Image (cartoon, rainbow, N blue to C red; front, side, top):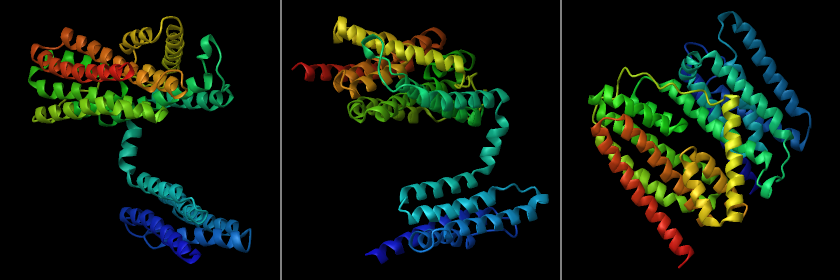
Length: 416
């Protein structure tokens, strides 16, 4: 049995090394330091070095690693004048470590590391293009946030205190990190694809703010009425992204809540996606520039979100204690106009800790989504042309029907 396990591990190490080497061989123009044959052997060397160290000679793995390091440094200095960078040399060392991880049974980690290494090597052009599109302010904002997180998060106390013990600084900062990271991913995609098409902007911009997309596209509809179908599709796509974002956030914190929210939010998303598919029959290439999205890693805005999130937690517990659950529903509906994320995080956290039932949490989240949808349609009503108003009204009515039906069913099940 042990022999079969070793054979599997050897094949896995070879396979992961092969994929990294395949990418290097494909990208090579002429001779290459390590290619489709060398990388599997390096991974295999890592595996057998770990085996020998584990069974016989403790220091063998260090000798092997230093040998590989020496060869890569020698190659680097040979190629230094050609200004090729050290990407290949670093990938060689990572491939050796992948083989080591396979031996010590870190199968998932080794596969993930192999995939990630190959991906990073393969997307050189897009990464360089994106890096050149960044502003200096973007880089500084990101560095500030990472430093603040690295320093602040580890020292924050992991215990509840304050009014109704609703405040946990470590949990609050974790939520801030999650929200800011999701926002930054959306910001990256907008900067990368922005200006190429309205639909790309709507899809990726929806990660940052579906309200901003709704507002900007509504204004554009009066300036460019011929883009009606694309603008409708763009706004609707951003609403779909918001639905999916709520699902991801709730699932990350409370899987049980995700099960409750999946049906109404996925039903809404699928039907809206079919509507988008019907309307996308125009060329999506335009000269429209991306909206003025802000880098989400701005310390003041991060602190504002943290304060608002904390306020929602305290308010929900206060109203639940003084008024009852009906008051909590009112808070979620009103607060959803401002920030659905904060409501989703609050409801997911409170339901996971047992403060409120999961069914109650699901109603709270859906009420926030409803109020946010109504608020966004008000933007359409005020700023969009008549055609876009009519089409988006259909989307709003359908969403209200699905979400209100869900709430009525949940309330009936709670009080049969």
